[in-house]
Structure formats: structure tokens, C-alpha cells
Length: 96
Image 1 (cartoon, helix red, strand yellow):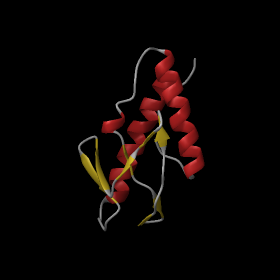
Image 2 (cartoon, rainbow, N blue to C red):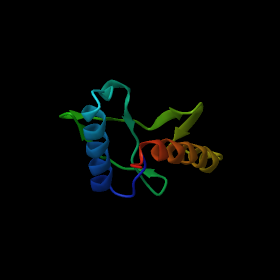
Image 3 (cartoon, rainbow, N blue to C red):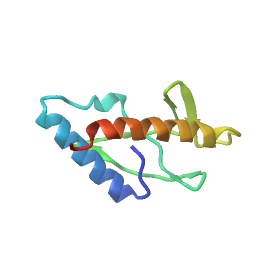
Image 4 (tube, rainbow, N blue to C red):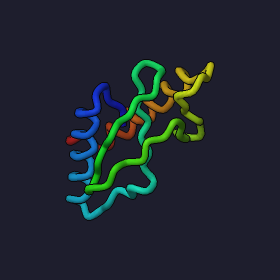
């Protein structure tokens, strides 16, 4: 999930968790990671799902690419690919 604000991200996480649990599924909290950035600087953020705080990291693997808040020349293309796939995935969850 991608969001411009922490409040919006928390709301989206809540809604996604609610929809998933309605269908008898669960989110594997231990496999979720959070990276919060303001520009290219990492900032603290707390997102809670099922009363558990999501682990904040400085890098994560997204579809085979390492996304990092540290200096990387190709981070924009990696984020673009991640956002593109996120858009595809979100279309699947969009109500018909």
C-alpha cells in the first residue's frame, strides 16, 4: 500500500484487514513491513493491524527488487514498478 499520509495509510490498512477478515482470511502481520519516507528521508510511523504494530524497515523486497530509503540511483524505477504492480493488485480488490 502507498499513501501520502500516515492517517490515510492506517485507514487503508484497517479497511483492507476488514475486507479480508469478512472473507475468512487473515493478514500475516509478521510478513508485513512498513517504510515511511518524507521525500527521501525516512521518518517514524506507526501503523497498527489487529492490535499489532507493523515493523518499520529501511528497505524491503518488492517483486524481486530491493526498495531502500538509502541512496540508490535506480530507486525511482524500482518504486515505479512496485506502484504499477500495486495498482494492478488494487484493481483486483476494487468493488465491481
